[in-house]
Image (cartoon, rainbow, N blue to C red):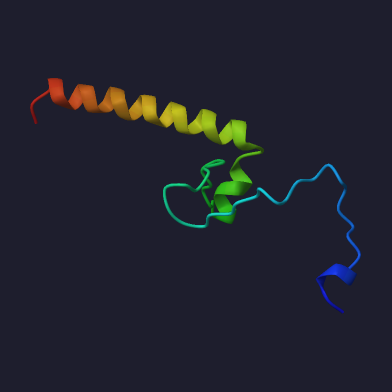
Length: 74
């Protein structure tokens, strides 16, 4: 059976002729950043919004702590 004899199950509106897949290099499209969380961390947060909120709070606390330690000489 050659390529022409294989039944095509794709819809006609799908144009795969112009599809380019780049696994590496500057031409790679960036869809999103992925971060792998450990199971114990996942258990603490119900969804991505909760994780983002907690991290933003932690960033704010770190900034405040950093500015305080710069003002006070240890």
